[in-house]
Length: 138
Image 1 (cartoon, rainbow, N blue to C red):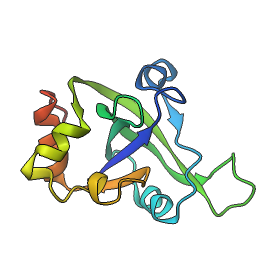
Image 2: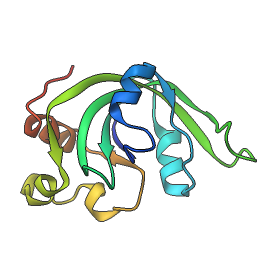
Image 3: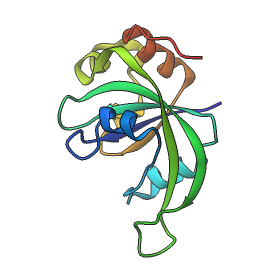
Image 4: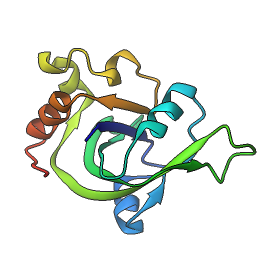
């Protein structure tokens, strides 16, 4: 299993809307590295859902429910989407400030590639964020 983090601006697509929808395709990614990360996602992989710009915090856990296919919102087949389903809301959201101050997360891609909307996580990074959020999944 692999672990990932996806970002969404809550005014565009929030965790609450995601939960209400029960499943969504993750579209609009127009960065090659983020696209390649989505193409590497496998069904069942776990994904942290991060509210960017407003809140700036990890708020929930999702899972990949369908592997990559062409983005229906794109004009060509350069871009891909995956389907995601919500799994669990974090008991306590984990803020960007907390992530920055946590030595165990010093190498997390969220900090090193901060403009990237889809990033890989190590199993350790995923577990640390769940621990900080007082949440268990598995």
